[in-house]
Length: 323
Image 1 (cartoon, one colour):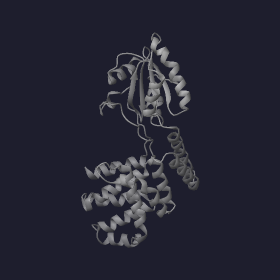
Image 2 (cartoon, one colour):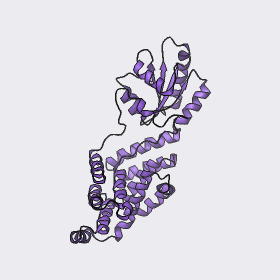
Image 3 (cartoon, rainbow, N blue to C red):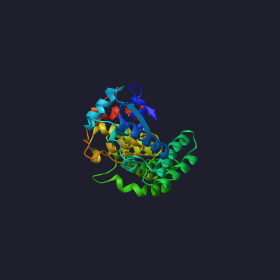
Image 4 (spheres, helix red, strand yellow):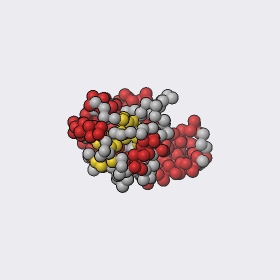
């Protein structure tokens, strides 16, 4: 259990909830129901064994925090509990509810034991890959997928490492269960990006040599097919910034070329470069407005994901080229 104040609100609540759900209990010394609820929450935190963090804030001592949350949810009484996930409040309940109802509330937002283990395996795989141990990272990712087949981030990282190891056929097989998410009205942008990454790696052996492509481009700056193929070769080889540099040349000359293929590939490279993010919350509060987050600005805005200067630089380049 952690105590929340204005000083640690961003670090220990908003940022922490990007990694694991945080349940904030708003209470006061004079509140009888608060004293009934507190031991139940303490018990459940221990039982759920790290699958959520219990945080508490004293309503009398931190009125700025509690006042904004109360206004956001339209609540005027305590105890009042708010679930934070992904860096924002997503649901809540009021009163000293029975333990069974609190469990039902938690299970809407808290990952199962298998899902939590898969997230831990994904994090460990990232550390292993960064330490130059791709084989061990692949094993961890296999474990993560086996524990939670719905963890798309683990699967995408697994595909990425397979492609980097030039195991293209294995990567195609691993990607297949989520391939349908890459297209259609409800397409997942990150899955779609990896679909382009897989396609680039599949196409790479059949492309003209980099020297031949460079010569074609030198002879005709508007040979977009050659430049696009050169970019795909760079993408497949992990030369991400070189790929984006070539794609940017196309975008600056003809944004609409080939149904915006250059822009789509550029965005795909950025996605592949981006570190995996935690799974999205299981669901927002029923009836909660989609724009509720901006109402909460206690101690400033919290950037959940750490910035990558190269990614930021190339996002700016794309924005300038498009607008």
